[in-house]
Image (cartoon, rainbow, N blue to C red; front, side):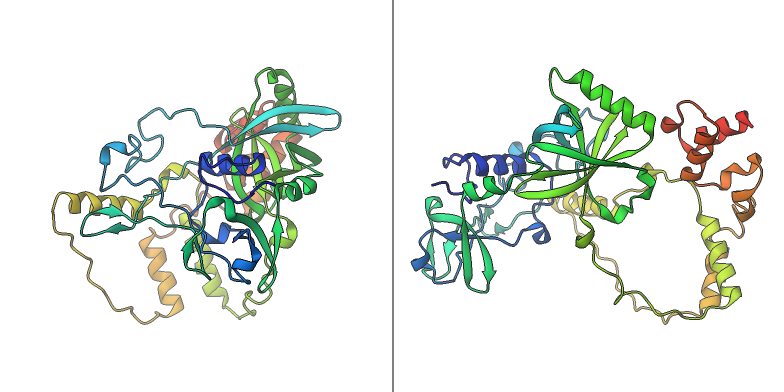
Length: 399
């Protein structure tokens, strides 16, 4: 009988658990975020030993290298951001299967599209600089539990656990296991970004380049996104397939009933004056522009890196003085001051509200989606690959 909860490498993992462990190892995911944990527990196999009290199930600390062995750290990964002036290694696939639509199957491999530049901190025993380790301990006996006595369980009610085996998870894999099943094609702009959870790249399996290219070209020409379902890590997900930079991209999505309602958070309608609203709109206009992701930097992480370097060099770290929060200013005065600080009416002349329904020469005030729609009606070739500026230029030439 398989032990679905044994995560330690080399402990003889059964197939389902080994697959899950490999996916977790190779995906750069938020593994340290407790909100990502599912409602299941690792329990000692003998139910008579825990009497409803699960063991403390935490693995050994992650690879320690900052203080004890700097040479063992991955090269260039402590402080440098991924892609910062260096060629990145080919990512390892975290899942393999096929995209299915109709009777066509496209064999693919999944790669994480995100490589977050997190700083890895460790708990260390200060006197000897030794890393802190963790063990799986039974809460009832206060003893370490060997891996072969641990199973995965679901807490159905408080203190009542249902043991799960590999066969149970296999039995539930009736739809979407090893398959990204396309069910619909929809305009990508209709999908609210709140549904997006994480982005993956889907590359072709060896020998499947032709059918992969067929789906890619069809998606690109249709200017639609494919809605699909798939199973990964004992969970079914909703997904959206789209084309980005010549590659099929999978947006892992939440289901509709996973989105929390806003009724209790939404503010009651409060009256604002026309002057306040006009000034707020002017302030927005002053900061309006195209989205340039390279413009935004992780300044908090950069500051932490400087502090780490300074402390390593034995320098004194100076703390910013604490300041008392000022009383909230008058709303109108705050808006006026903000507009003045932003440079007055800068940008107002280039973004008139009337331009949304104006002549072709007023295209700079339109959104990317509105430009895409005009380009579609004008039958401009290659519009799906154009930037906003390119769309404006193409529409102006076509006018």
